[in-house]
Amino acid sequence: MKVYRLDPIGTLDGLKLGDEAEPRPGLREIAIRIRATSLNYRDLKVATGTYERSEIKPRPIPLSDGAGDIVEVGPGVTRVKVGDRVAGIFTQRWLGGRIDPAYAASALGGPSDGMLAERVVLSEEGVVPIPAHLSFEEAATLPCAALTAWHALFARGRLTAGETVLSLGTGGVSLFALQFARMAGARVIVTSGSEEKIARLKAMGVTDVVNYRATPDWERAVLELTGGQGVDHAVELGGAGTFAKSLAALRTGGSLYLIGSLAETAQVNPQRILAKRANVHGIQVGSREMFWAMNRAIAQAKLKPVIDRQFEFGDARAAYDYFASRAHFGKIVVRGA
Image (tube, rainbow, N blue to C red; front, side, top):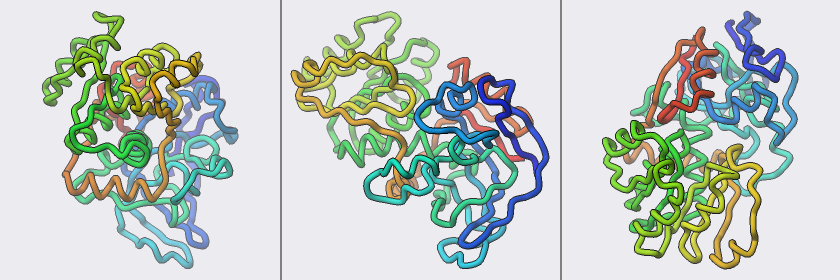
């Protein structure tokens, strides 16, 4: 089968395509023909050797997000069957309840082999069915970016209609947060530094957009848009450069969500958190239980993920390069081999 590995880690030149024997499923395992994968910021950090949240295995198969159809099942499999359309969950052992540090080694695309291969084997517990109205390419965008946004706004934030959500930028998590918030009847304010991307946001029906390049004190603009009250929820993706501004844009008693690998190296003044009576949550993806709930909502609303570009399997390096350019609006997908 065709498969990519990172060998060595530390540079995108380490992304190498090769041929390997097809893996076969063992007890309670399934083999999935991968039809599409998608990229996240974490994938770029793993490839370049700058991801330090967990130990990375030698020569890993990259990419945590993927969707496909089950082509073979091992002994004892009862949850799924051959032909089912599924997506893998990011942390294979986090099925529900609280996150446990012991689960970190089961994260795909780093500590464990990922999805950028023609065929992968996972535990039958480590997949969820994908919504029927989505293509494999669309479903491949869900496991990390979508679930992170869902975890923040609903599993933690208990978002309700009429509340206001601030989402930074136009990457995958940001646009899923936008879509989910609007789906729930919330007001959304988005920041972007690109007039071209702002035009695309407005074409999606977003009316409250702040250009952070034209308005460096964009937190003041957000306060003005909310009548001086601030937002109920802030999806913080900028890290060191934006944490304080997102906090300033938050209403008293509001919730701020620090997202995954993006929010790093920020200097935090706890007095400002106290002054806002803010609820600050660290968010990294979510459990299988959350994934199920999210997919039910996506199916009910017939929500469609925003895909910027799709690349063929043999052009995975070009997909990485495009992602690194930060020119994307939404998700970047690599089709299956």
